[in-house]
Image 1: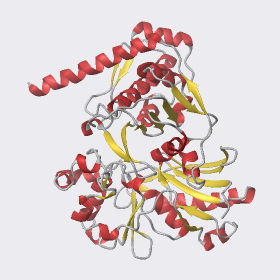
Image 2: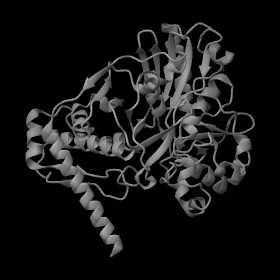
Image 3: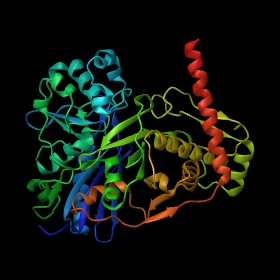
Image 4: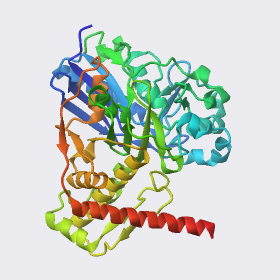
Length: 466
């Protein structure tokens, strides 16, 4: 097969599902279709509307194929999800929404079974954010349905299976805080064997493996040529990282922004990761462990800032600095570097909407800088995703870390680029733009924010001792 030129990238995020056409020669998206990733409240528990996504993908592939030649299909999705398939390849149970709190009802039982952080690099997270906790809860809460499970398939590979008919699992999705992966051994964790799940796991494949051609019936339905290759697929944060593994010299860091802000350190200083602060070990597309940290930054922005003016003025910046107004963590509790701290505004009573938007953007930059420090990140910081267009966020991240930022040019997201490059045999990504402003006032603001946050942590510790 000749090298692909136009790749259809399926990108299923927590908030939206996207089907993009990526031009590997021009290094840019040339078409895009989107739909909300809706959670269905009925049934045994809240779950993703996979039927709606499937209809969207089939019709979307037809629309793209009518206007362009499709050379390959690649998949990237959010983590903390898997499909439980019965013997006929259908769902034995719906794909659970990882924000559902059902698994908390069996948390104590699960905690006695899950492996130590040293084995999995996976912190204990709430609700269904540990995929192992999901599977344990489903197996105990719905034993008859779970008894019909023939295969446990990681989420990107579920969609690749529906497209190609070939079953696989893959390490980037298994290695993202699932409790199912031993990052040192490069194999399933002791939990998988303890629960008897290994026999349910399909063969392991690399993210860049071609699983096979698009199913003939799907090609006919979408009026596409036969034989379009379908690639195995990748976890979305690792899709953002992948292009830079091919092109950058360590040390460097990648900040992948979306519903989650995920920070990944390549070649940084060695640090002891703290699972209580939402640090973890991811696995990159080449199978190597990557120190990582995260917080739900996109969701926090959606909750607080999405409806506020998007372009604060220079006057807004001066006003916020004069007032010392700031937002302290955490907007979304239970995750991130300050999981037990409650959100609090400081000296913010007189802020206008524009000034409040600015303080929220600075808060997100400071939280990202904290995450980078926790994982020993060094060198330039590559910012991917929606926050790469937020100037206030970028300014604060650079000021708080004292390091150069590098930004992708154009509107293409890192997840789309990374997923497309899986089909390209290791081609280098597009150029990055440098961002390193000299902002001493923001550096001083960052120091003040860090002092306040540390003070609150000290107060919490003193309260517990008392």
